[in-house]
Image (cartoon, rainbow over all chains, first blue to last red; front, side, top):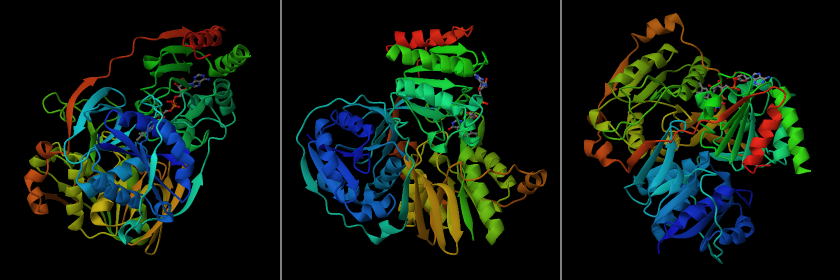
Length: 319
Length: 259
Ligand SMILES: Cc1cc2nc3c(=O)[nH]c(=O)nc-3n(C[C@H](O)[C@H](O)[C@H](O)COP(=O)(O)OP(=O)(O)OC[C@H]3O[C@@H](n4cnc5c(N)ncnc54)[C@H](O)[C@@H]3O)c2cc1C
């Protein structure tokens, strides 16, 4: 069976859930081989976990050149791995960086590329959801090695324990791949809450929340459910909540089990980031708000009454 | 400083969008077509740099004849001129092909900086700036929420999933920007009038030295096999809060086994 290269998504050696989702998807196409990029010492922290989800091999590409320059070194290493291993496909996360690495790799190896796949079939057919969730498309790469980026939270990760072989990959980054230097990296963490794009529950607040202080109402509900907090662009633009929590077309795309939109009208650009959520709940005082069109359950009412009350009741149920 | 801004015409993300049954490409005829929203931020960034440092701003668009409307709209914000690549053979081009065409066009222009939006609202593929940097062998400074130009040195704050990165480079570069970078200006009446007489140069594939069998739907590197509307969600339940809204909400969550 051919190998399938899966580019591991991690934050300083902590694997992201999408990595396991990609390893699961890869198993339909062939034998998953994880590719770890990072500073020296990164792969050690990851290998066991990658094995749990079926990685047969782990290619370790560790070098300060990988972390010190933007995108291009990864594409270069991947291009040589593709040439050597002739994989059935290359899977990457559909993050900004994942897509950019995929894009450069496509040019280097002369392959086609599909981004934002929610599903990958055994024959390489990828499913995408486009136009703010309105249309489902099935596409296939027909030139070269298929390069597919996978949307986080779309595939259900399924363990398939294996003991991966690790193999160090020589990282010889050319000068051409060292043109953009990463001189600093700042993590703005979500604190103790789960990461937005991975969370199984997301509670988002919009302009209706009214102020940064009032966002404690949203955070309270989120914490009672163990959820991540999101925000509409009106909320982030108004400074109610930091920009990295914005959900929507120009923010993050989330696809949780439960999405709660509180004081959010449901503009199409917001929907673009949350429409594929399994269950959608809305609280809005305007009964005509478009968010109700996609809500499985909607409460027409004042969020400042409904949300704190619901938070208390949830806490009480959970004991 | 001479800057080229990449501008794409897209179906309005605020209205109904569709694919065509005939060839599974984006339906542009029935859609209301607009400038890709993110590109307005790219234009604004370019204009601010030009106004501070001198030089020219050129709009570069690949698209059918109808894209002229979008080019005029872009010019009305203040850029100096435009290049429009239009050729029947480009219909249905995939991302790698589009990057080939734009790269060839950029090779024929004089520039210090290329600025584009970080993604388009139709495909949301977000690979074009990276592909161009790869083809043109220039630094990729993508996903910027802030751009600083200090002589030949360029520095960006790059938005990432986990926070941000400071990335720097020298010389000619490709920059892509998010909508957090600035507040685009509205075209003035004068700007709209002036846009009508600004030079727009149209180029064909032949002008770029690209053969028609390298591009277009028939030669695309990926293919849409089928598409369908996403099944509409069954109508949900809507309750009006009369003091019991929270309770009903929690009961719903319980029925979904969430609490
Ligand atoms: C290029 C572009 C990209 C964009 N990208 C994004 C994006 O990524 N994400 C995004 O979210 N938006 C995005 N937008 C903006 C989008 O069009 C909307 O403006 C935005 O989503 C509105 O946010 P909102 O729903 O919080 O605010 P509003 O539309 O103002 O809605 C506020 C809602 O709160 C309700 N409300 C007020 N007070 C209360 C109360 N006390 N109790 C209950 N309900 C209350 C109101 O009834 C109203 O429905 C983008 C726009 C453009 C042009």
